[in-house]
Each structure stands twice: as structure tokens, then as C-alpha cells.
Image (tube, rainbow, N blue to C red; front, side):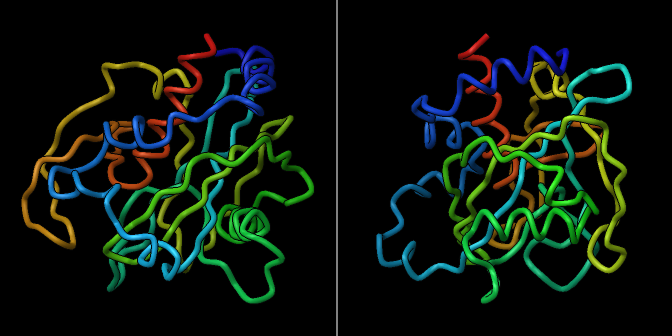
Length: 213
């Protein structure tokens, strides 16, 4: 998709109702089909994180967004593909600032270059007890990425048209923190399997853009 056309579409999403769970549910592993039933107390006591779905033009004005492959470590989200982002820190004024700060720290995009368009629907991640707030943001020009070597294994630049292509939806077997060898819905983007919370957020992005086109 041409980036100018994409920006025009984004101007329409600021006030529309988000599909939320109806989009998320498409990408939920079978063992989490009751994910919407978590108690209000669980969600209120969850740790908070902010991530950024950052869109930008390449050098021929095609629309891309950035994901990253996390380093392998002893933790729930080891070696997973995700949006730039991280947990709320005491010095952050709000969760949007968290998403912007973490994006700068992890992939090197200056905060002043980013225009935040709107928040998307929150996603609760039971294994790590995080409630994640995604935001949609744009850059007006191709970025120069610089990865944070301690946390980021690889920066992944994805063409938006690949997300919108239904052929890149799949079912695959993954090892999770709560089950071994279960089949999960996923996107295949640039050869990477994107599943779990990030896939749920991408599903909402895809559904919103589909609705507007």
C-alpha cells in the first residue's frame, strides 16, 4: 500500500470503534479461549506495558511497519517476535510515553519523529501478568534503525501488504509457557512466526484497515 494512501486511511481511525476481542480472538491459542474471562481484579493488578505499531514509508513510498526478534533469555517472551515496547517505569508520565521511550531504546527511532495516531485495544498476557497497551504511530520518512544489542536480536521490517495478505495466516505448533506442542494461529511475516499477543494486536490492525478500505 502506498504510504500516502495509508496515512489518509489512518486519519479515519481516530474516532471509530475498535473490534477489540473479536479481532484478538482469531489469534488466541486454544488453551487461552477463556482469555476474556479474567477477573477485573486480575486485570487491575496486572503489570502494565506499552508497545508501538510504528508505520513508515520505504524509499519508494511503500508502507512498512517494524517488529523485532527478542534475545533468548530465561523468561516468558524469550526469542519471540514483538512490537517495540516494554514495561511502565516510575519516571514515565503515562503508558504512551512508555511505548515511545521503549521504541527509542530498542530500535533507535527518536521520539520527536513519531506521531502517535491513537491507542488500540489492550491485551492481557496471563503467563507474564502484563496488560499491554498498543499504540499506532507513524513516521513521515524512512527511519534509520539502531537495535539495542542486549535485548534485540534482529529488527524486522514488514511490508504492510504482507500482513493484509490472507495467505500469510497459518496454524503452527509452538511450545508455550503453559503447554508443550500446541497448535496456535499465527502470521508468517518475513519468514518469522508471529503469534500470541503480538499476533492479536496485528489482527486488530488488519481488521481496522480492512474495514476502512
